[in-house]
Amino acid sequence: MEFSVNMQPELGMSPGWIILGGAILLVSAILFALVFIYKKAPKTVKPKAPKPVSKPTSFYIRQKALISIDKVAFDLSKSGIDTRESYQRLSLIMRTFVSEMTGRNFTSLTLSELKKMGLGSLAGLIENCYAPEFALKTEADFKSDAEKAKWMVKTWS
Image (cartoon, rainbow, N blue to C red; front, side, top):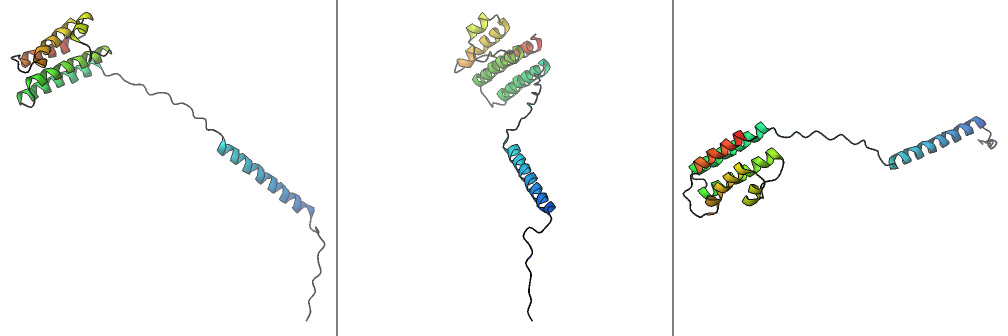
C-alpha cells in the first residue's frame, strides 16, 4: 500500500493569522521594554516628616536628679563608695542637672568659669564638692551637702 501526500502551497494560510502573530510579537516587545525601563529607573521616595522629639520636662529632670542624689547617699551609707567618689558623683549630677535644665553643657566647665557665668548657687555647691573630691581624706559632711543639692534642684528656676 502506497500513500502519497500532496504538498500544500506555501503561505496558503489566511494572512490574518500572520498579522495577528506579528501584532502579538510587537506588543510583547513593547511590554518587555517598558518593564525593563521601569525596573532600571531610579525610585523616587517621598521624604518622611521627622518625628517630633519631646524634650524631657523639668519635673522629670528634677526627679531624675533627686533620685540620683539619694542613690549616691545610699551607696555611701552602705559603704559601696567612699566620700571622695560620692562628691565626684554629686558634682557630676548637679552639672548634668543644670545642663539639662538650661540646654547648655556645664559638665566640663571649671569652677572659675561657673562663677564668671553668674551661676552662684551651682558654683557654691561645686566649690563645696572640690575639697572632698580632690582630697585623699576629708571630714566633709556629705549628708548636709546632699541636702543642699536637693534644695537647689527643687528651687531651680
